[in-house]
Length: 337
Image (tube, rainbow, N blue to C red):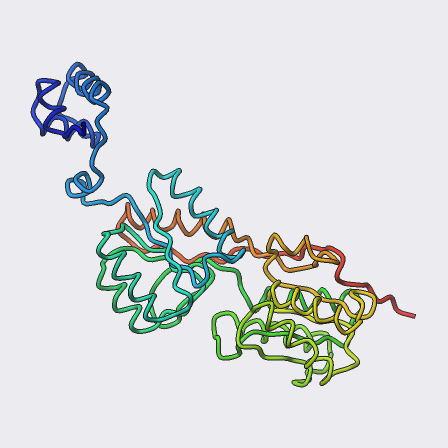
């Protein structure tokens, strides 16, 4: 049998309002009354109705998170950080997989609005005007993860993509390479695509190395397939390259697979550095040297920012988190003769 709050009140011989106050941690009752209510809850094995409690507290104790690809290792690491923080802060999370599809994103935003979530985390996609209008109409806090918006005033947590790409390319330079190509993402992507290209070019320019557009492949995205198809094109255009900066680990792993098919030895004949430090990077053959984004920390920090906004009712400052090079075995040092 499923008992209600009315049954608990009757069993404890108190009012329904008193049971509600005990459940929500409010004052206005004695210690003895609290013990009677808690004992009644225990004896009846009463489970509070989350929806009913939400109507009282004006909170659902849930937050929504939207991913463009929820099954990816990138998303999984961010989600691990988010879930750890959410549960520590006494709430739960609704995960939405948008598949980078505008209509699906709008459908999920409507669902999260109907669920009356307390806040939203928006991951790795650009904020369109349509998204912004819907999010703004919900009147709840929003924090962006691994993306940002120059047009709309949402706080964000990310690394500096341009600086991280500079660091990756500069590492190759310091390892003795002077003929360095790039497997990039979509140059129309102003959040991660173009900034990583800019960082690559800046590192070359700072070292006095020529910038050759033939040494850059612009892909539609950052996928394994993009890297697999991009490497042969890049080597056809620039056959004298000794190193490549790949703008994601997936691109790098696709390139390593294509190199194997082409009979190009990594790193003896061609060095490759990736970007992200996904778990699969250290499983590659050879293990992938890469620029690490602190993805779990990004998830935790963004969640803590979201809860601060939910509790304080005001905007928080955006955060740029540090990146670093993780050295493995896919980059060979070229020593001067």
